[in-house]
Amino acid sequence: MVSRPPTRVAIIGAGLAGLTLAISLHRQGIPSKIYELRQPTVATSGALMLSPNALRILDTLGLYERLHKQGFNFETLDFKNHDQITTDKYYLGQEKLYGYKALRIYRQVLLTELRAEVKNLNIPVTYGVKFSHIISENEDGVKFAFTDGTHASSDILIGADGIHSTVRKYIAPDVIPKYSGMVAITCALQRSTLQYPPDIRAEDYPMPVAIHGKNGAFVMAPQNVDGSEVLAGTQRAWPEQDRAGWDALLADREGLLKLFREGYDTWPEIVQSALDNVPLDTLAIWPYYTVPKLESWFSANKRVIILGDAAHAIPPTAGQGASQGFEDAFTLAALLPHINGKLPLDEALINWKDMRQQRIDKVIKLTLQLNNARLPEAEREKLAAAGAPVWESGDHGELGWLYNTEVEKEVLDYVKAKNKNPHTCPVDWVASKLGSPKQA
Image 1 (cartoon, rainbow, N blue to C red):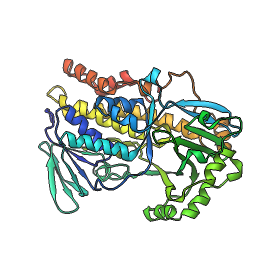
Image 2: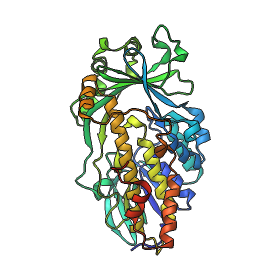
Image 3: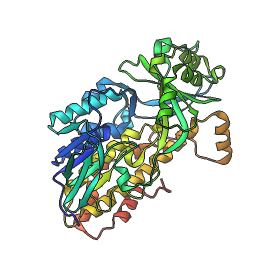
Image 4: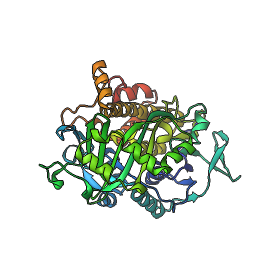
């Protein structure tokens, strides 16, 4: 039974979660080393939404002031029907209630700032190495190998290597990501090319916006500082492909544009204008994959751990994919310094995983409600008749459970309770704090 804090942590993956984990561990006085396959010169496309729960973590780590000036700050996603009537709103952020507006920022900008902070903190990163397998694992630590034949060792190895995680294969070898049957098709276009309803000025048209029609929802979201560039996209049912098949779909730009424009005549003028002005070189696809719920996020000896998309890939609808990865990293880093005789590593990880899983369950439930709201009209009508959950807003503070929860404090409260009473049951404590998924 391990009853001391780790002094060496290896992180597989220098994506958002891996970099955030390294910075969070440094804040806690725990050294780490990152291993990453891709070179930092490889550009990453696209942008992502960050809500208050993620921004609060980035603020605590000293990064928010740099980041929020480099993206588009907003509060709501407006839902509109074909007649351009606003039918609902979803708060991705709200400064008064949740402390922060939401931030849409280029993924490359976020990665650049995280890498700069890692470099500033002198956290070592080895690029160009591909994790292969675990050689051995015991109470003395874990030894692991890379595909080039080199070996390394550490007290703990943490896989932050994404939805197709290689580290996860060691913990859950039979688990593979599950395809949802839907692929998002997006492009980046200039907001100035859009045709707005005649009675609405361009500067008064709310964005981000999700326009709901017979074919589903068409989303437009500004993604640079002044909002002049807009991501535009929708989702389509499409059979699962292997890697070569997805690459072929993306490479056939004219064919992809044709698929993107299906149902053109059923959309209002503003969507048609977006579809009329698609820069072919910006077309992108995002097949929606999820990771089945795992029994464990760590190995039997507790020396190998996964987090972020490796443990629980979440569709992007609620803007919580990266945010929950940040929470995983931040809370695990808060927990590890407190490993001791009263709180050994195995009990600590069980508590951490249970706490995180219950929160993920609630986020997935919310995401399903939002996904259902984006389905084609006929599908939404079927769901309504069956009483299936579809997002409808309530009071403006209804997302406080998501945006205002102090995740680090919850971990430290548990540590305090455990040190005071070593017989505290992790599962019972988590349930008392968060409630069961059914109650969520």
